[in-house]
Image 1 (cartoon, rainbow, N blue to C red):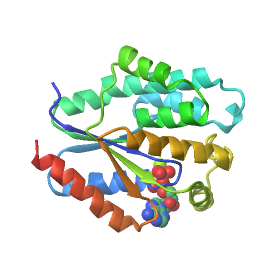
Image 2 (image 1 turned 90 degrees about the horizontal axis):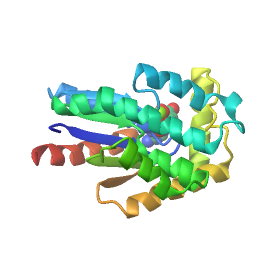
Image 3 (image 1 turned 180 degrees about the horizontal axis):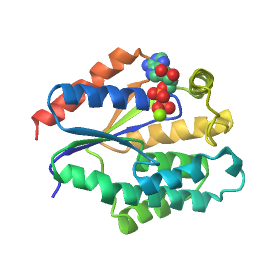
Length: 214
Ligand SMILES: Nc1ncnc2c1ncn2[C@@H]1O[C@H](COP(=O)(O)OP(=O)(O)O)[C@@H](O)[C@H]1O
Ligand SMILES: [Mg+2]
């Protein structure tokens, strides 16, 4: 029996998901609301091992798209059973930095896999939960790449397998996310080029509205 609120953040690399997810978690905790922040891939110990395979730039061009899609579903299954569902049952607000819509945007819109097949695995094998709110932070692919390169420079980290994909791939993924938003009522689309505080206030307003309704 689900009692908490399940919130996901989606969007292309560098749109601001991790920044906003962290701000929301801090805001909720300050208000005394039980909240956890998690992520995909890698929200569990097993998931971290799956994540290493997925982000490794050495696997570019080798990792088969179906293997990739199934690894994401495996990570998600573990994440749901081990962390998301138990916390929702205890009444937590569960915030996930990426979830199923990333699979559809990257693997289906980006790489061309069949949406129905991936959704079928999610619904019938993983028994996936629908989020209560999906925050899609939308930015263009040029801004995305600029931010990702800046971040890698300041944090002195290597670009991941996705970050080294070409601009056109990120454009297709972005368009995929926007298409998904058009067809689902639980999506809230935010302009990721607004400043961090403005976006945060919009997110808080939506979450407060939902919390007051439960
Ligand atoms: N609204 C914003 N305006 C300008 N820069 C931002 C904004 N949101 C995030 N950033 C910066 O862009 C980079 C990517 O943000 P991050 O939250 O890590 O994105 P994501 O998790 O979606 O990849 C970081 O350096 C972050 O400080
Ligand atoms: Mg991030």
